[in-house]
Amino acid sequence: MSRRMFVAVLPPPEVVADLADYVEPRAERDSPLRWSPQQNWHLTLAFMAAVADRDLDELVEQLAGLAGRRDRFELRLQGAGSFPNPARGKLLWTGVAGEVDQLERLSTGSRTAAVRAGVAVDGAKFRPHLTLARSNRPVEMTRWLRVFDLYAGPSWQVSEIALVQSQLAPGGSRYQVAEVFPLGAGVPEQAG
Image (cartoon, rainbow, N blue to C red):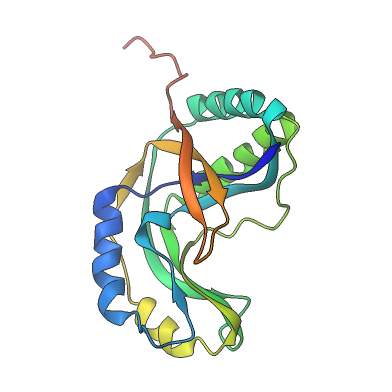
């Protein structure tokens, strides 16, 4: 048996609340976009379409080791964009600012950890973002980009990564956190 999983940074509740306060009055309910529920908001580091049960323990061990060797760092959600492009967008997102290089290293490390555990990882280039809305068909996104590009959320310290199981369901995916790995937990303290 296998399961869909991803490694992610989950923004803390105060960051989610700030973004939700910005999105809510601007999310047009009669638009062609399906707005992501805030409980699904995350920054994907590595996506794995099929994690076999036999590989799960090794994946958890590899991710724990990775997280333990990484330092905490600062991020904030800011700006907007769309995939694949504004003229024919199918996904509207908010971007990331702050120590993005640390986030990129964490993504690379998460993908390496999965491969070492024998798990195939989505090979798409890492583009840090948090998905706000999706569309089944291409949509002109310029007006939404103008609105959401003005967003700049509060900074927070990234202190952990999560291994999340994704279950496809009518109306959208449901996510369940399987494991949480604190950053820096495996780094011995140095004497003063």
